[in-house]
Image (cartoon, rainbow, N blue to C red; front, side, top):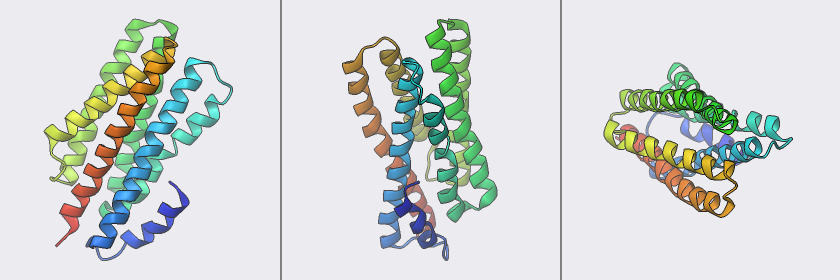
Length: 195
């Protein structure tokens, strides 16, 4: 998470009620987290596609995203739930990397298996989110997560196929969709914790 957002966590960890001022800050924190999620995912995809020497460093930075999400979740849901979400989000990223690796190697069977597990993981995330906050409706959340997966796969295919312009066009869609996801996350918490 960015330094500004780290400091803001103290702002959220109060009496459990979200004020209007906190709602604005919460929205910005979720937007930052989702921006980092999609930007570092793109960096890892490109590093994998082009055998870049920064792959290990980029992957390490990407895998900082789930703990950063967990820090924010912890303020509202406690450590156990935050840790569960961190594990689910980490699995989402690890399976995605496996999918890109197998697709690059031309191993369609392994890539297909990874893609099935990726969508199963998305279903787990959706159900988990709805379980902790009923404002995160299953149907709507599933639609957003599936769109996120489909666009990320499309981006990876374009990068592996050296379709650079197409890859950038797809990433523009990913970025827009990530902001919608971020806003849904913050709005769900605001609805749940505003009395």
